[in-house]
Amino acid sequence: HELYLMCDDLDASMEELKARGAEFPNPVTEAGFGRVASMKIPGGSELALYEPRHPVAIQKDHSA
Image (cartoon, rainbow, N blue to C red):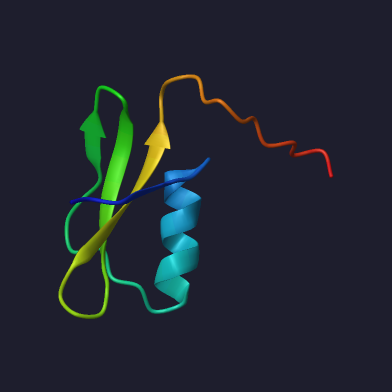
């Protein structure tokens, strides 16, 4: 199984997580559905972040 966390800005999310000690062992992958990065998590597994290129069901209001 794989788990992906969707983010609005992959580069900004990665920088924020790196500042908190996260490690991204591989470069960002460009896929048809969006940009993907894998982050190492405790236990030796990875958790993926992705920035979609497709419309999403919920739009975040950035005006607040």
